[in-house]
Length: 148
Length: 157
Image 1 (cartoon, rainbow over the protein chains, first blue to last red):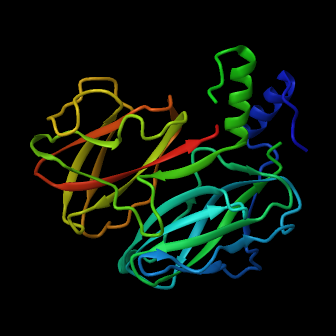
Image 2: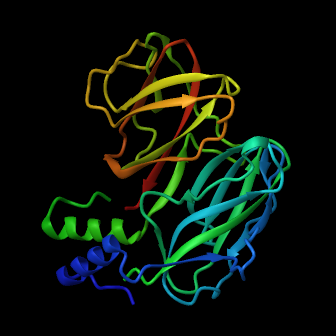
């Protein structure tokens, strides 16, 4: 439930966010003990690749949630990517430039931004990839539920 | 729309920011599928180089928040140690630094051949800029090196 904009509610929400109370982080696509490669995205050569692909299909996450970041799995080394995430309408929620070389094939958590991005329950989240050449990247989304 | 500095407005803006409501992050310069190289700047050799504009005045009409930066080494991973200053005032583009005005960010980067990938550099707190503001930077280094900077900004906080 979204806390209404009254003073007590704001205090409670801020307190809960800063202290991490009720924050629960999960990956989507969900994994079952094996590290997830994520959703495979292909970038175009000098353009956006294929149409937006679902990181979270509509109704896949039934609670209000916050997009916190992304994990990236390169199956194609030495590439420069642009990752763009939208809400499916498509309004762009965030975008990042990712530069990977062969010797840095693994990459850590990519923060969405200083603040997580709020999405209502059942919202769709999609992503697409651009690049100088045709390359492939696996993307998993880290999201939180229960911040409020 | 800029939230006014009323108590209720501050409450609402704080709530929106921390809870992530209406946050949208974008890159500047804007890209269209090809990863942005960013705005190029050359560091001076043992001094500040010339100032370059990331965002020229008036380019972003709406209020925005400076959230972070992404770097691109134009030198192909050559060893370089640079320091950058980011500000919204100071000398016009093309003129020498330093920018003797309040900085939005001062940071040091040590880039070598084995660290060619750059993850976003996020500021702990976004820096608010009114619509139409300029964002400029200059770089310093032990030697003249090139670096490109792309800004991550947010709308809608």
